[in-house]
Length: 112
Length: 112
Image (cartoon, rainbow over all chains, first blue to last red; front, side):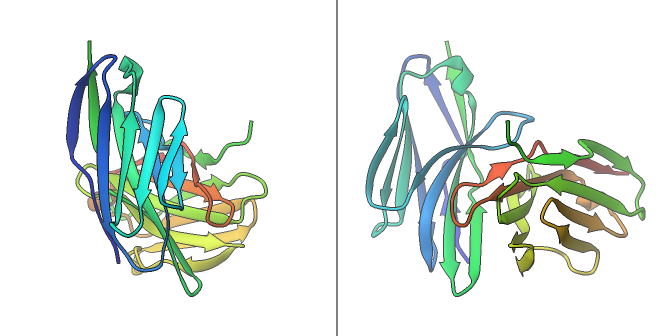
């Protein structure tokens, strides 16, 4: 199995930066995904990290350290519409088994 | 505009009744996931298929749940008999191999 840990809630001010950390323990690690989920809606894909390092995509960046079992999602220039739950998800493959498992999510509230 | 389509969007049923949820994955995607989301448990993986073959359904209560892919354009999740504790949002997601999963809008199930 795998353990995926991320903070439950974070609050930040419009225009600020927020970093959401995710730690995981798993065997057969493939890569790490970040998804955004607004209340009442489906999760939508944000980023995918396979190799160590930082992936930047506009206002959002994601970092991965495979050796440390650690990732973070960085949200810059926060906007009100960024208020949502952010889900860390780990993909693993072992033999023919492939799984995409999610953390509990971090609810980010952006205040004016 | 390719998307995962789930039906019905909402379902209210009485305890003991059979419930069938349907999913049309994105054309060309060979991996299909079924997830259940509740406030308490977050997103739980119930089952997944690759090339229509069930690879893992260990997250699914086998005595009442069943998942099938009768063809490449249809995945089904059945609950028989349904119980109040099955009330949740059920998401279907599809993808290609180990890349990101695209989620449908979900079926909100209420069992009374």
